Length: 148
Image 1 (cartoon, rainbow, N blue to C red):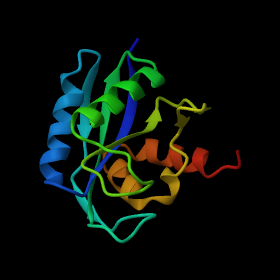
Image 2: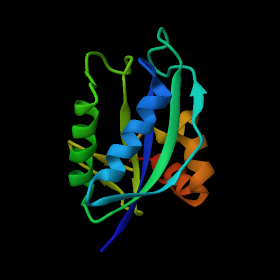
Image 3: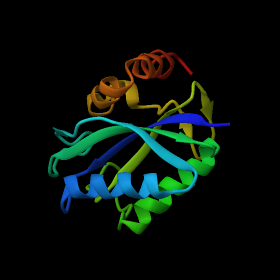
Image 4: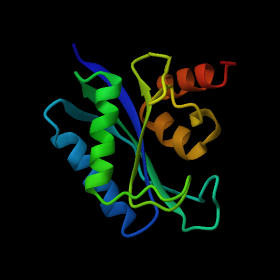
């Protein structure tokens, strides 16, 4: 059975627009993932750690038969293949791919929390998501902002 997942992509070092395009191509090339929607790219100030270059951010919708944790592993692998280094939290990055929502599943594990626990506080996530899936953005806000 196919599920819909909604991903946030961002980059702020190297050539961010090209890296976003490459990440989308890599995601879409996976035999168990198909890109079904993509937002425009927006430029935003860094969040959390602000002394770094602006980010290029966007959202994509995918259809997949992978389970959420399997999808996460594929996305982490794509980040690694593209040169992502996890040196500091919220630091500069060549690519960042986060799962914002997966169907209407609310889950919390040591590897993945759905919907993304910070999405409702980040316009750079919500604005692109609202562009391609306003009903999903509304659901993310309602669930992520509720007490856990």
